[in-house]
Image 1 (cartoon, one colour):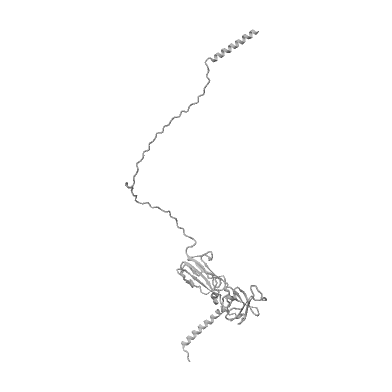
Image 2 (cartoon, helix red, strand yellow):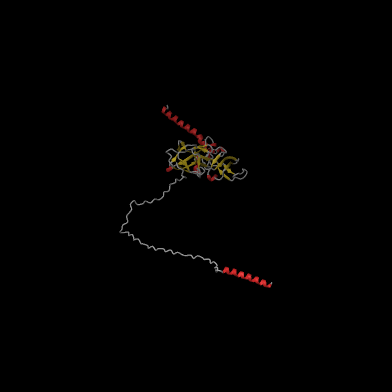
Length: 331
């Protein structure tokens, strides 16, 4: 049967699609294929751990923190299908570290609890949104910083890093899958700390002012569904305010003094309603000033009797004469 050109075209298209699927297969296989001694995160499922040597019915054991392979196992898990292994939280929570394959006690893989954290970075003003900052000036260029141990997925094979999705919700519950042409879906994290760089021009009109919330999640191998605790496969949310004015600065309003408006027209007082009493004349009593005479103190001088000095002189003469006569008689 001769194949027409049209049929050959369809066959060529089918083969092209099949080739693309084959080329994409290593990436998918790399994400869930676990080399011996690689890291497995609690909550991952459909993992291929055959590289460890596990077969259906094999026993995986954990000797505890710092435990020795010579001691008795602290926990044991039986492998069902090594090509579709599930690191369930029920079996592996609290049992991090190396797990060994019996009977040879070779290391099958390392179990870790996933950790995931996201921060908002303002590249224009050079600060990170954290516990002390909640405001991004509208017009600044912004990006994200991601810290996680999930980057170790990049060591499994041909994958470039752990696929992380950033969920950004704005005012009115608007969800953004990209910012300024930068996709927020399946961001590959090859190492930490990882930064997107300045990818969000917040001054554009499609980003209204208001409250935004962002978080990150990793859906690889159904990790976020099986281990959804905040800070593990799903990060804590970061909430911030996008606006021009700093919300911590409250504008002051000048205080105005109350004013009283006086009536523009004075109402005259009617003589019928108001009577002015007559003035009362107060009689003025004259004040009489009485002069007080203060008596003068008189000093009495001794009084001399007229002729008294002459009598004293005569008496003195007579006395002297008498004394002379008496003296002569005695002689």
